[in-house]
Length: 67
Image 1 (cartoon, rainbow, N blue to C red):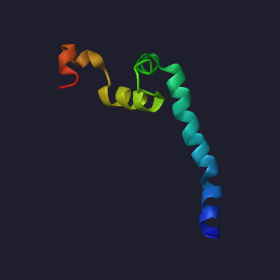
Image 2: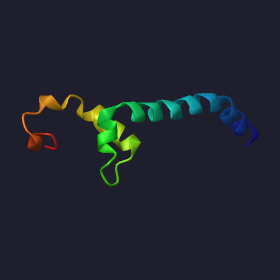
Image 3: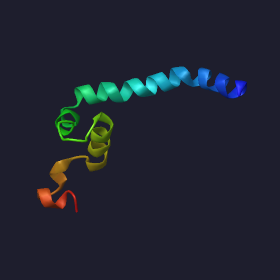
Image 4: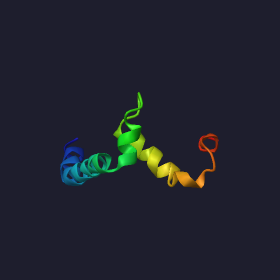
């Protein structure tokens, strides 16, 4: 148990940096801000949607996006 706690302590700086980067991105990306107004969509979900969809102009219609 002590070894595991030491490992967590050693990785805490990396964990903290990982948690800050998405929060910063969520505040600056207008697409993420727009998606977070939807009920049930938080910053992480919004960032995943933005990453997965990419450039929405590649879809010829709104119906083709979810398909």
